[in-house]
Amino acid sequence: MIAPDHSPHGEDPISGRLYEVDASDPKSELVDRAGLGTRDIAQIDTLMKALSALREEEQRISDASQRYMGLSALDMRALHYLIIAKNRDEVVTPSMIANYLEISAASTTKLLNRLEQGGHIVRHVHPVDRRAFAIEVTPESRAAAMQTVGSQHAQRFHSAARLSGDERDVVIRFLTEMTRDISMDKATWATPED
Picture 1 (cartoon, one colour):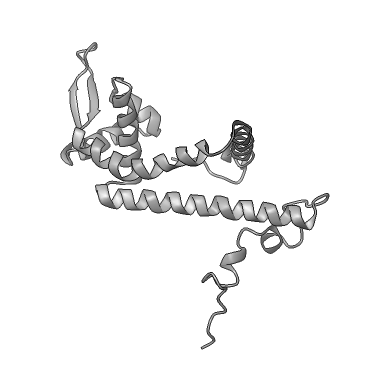
Picture 2 (picture 1 turned 45 degrees about the vertical axis):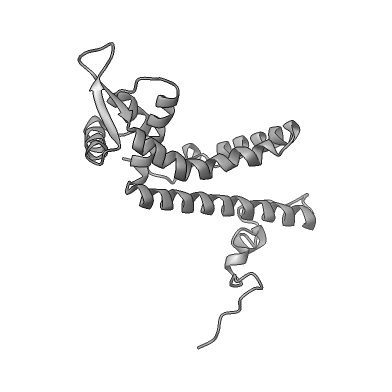
């Protein structure tokens, strides 16, 4: 058996190059690099690798928080929504959660039942519309989420605060344009989600 050739940072020769344009598109079939110098390409490769590292770390945080809370990603999104609503003194109805999560009324009922049985939410009669329910996160679940995933994600604010206003404008423009450029709305090959 041949031992893998590891880089000094513990990466194999492929994983360290996953986000280099010359490695993923050596014949320029996807990315036209005309007008870009070697330094520009290397810097863009470094930027793509940094974005990947951020996504991977955010996924690790998400996975760890789901394990800690004993909840699914969808459950966690619902709790996040409810925490923000609580912070803003907003009343949340099941239909608001369904719209936010883009799930059916039946799926919303199942989700709310699961969260209620787990002690994560409570349902009250709506303060204005007595025919509807208001959903609220429990203080215990709010505290657990805030002390775990919330405190991890709060560090992003500090990273952004260390930038100047002009630097933040550049980052905002870059992230907004990249989100628009990779939008699945433009992907003719993608099938709609159920």
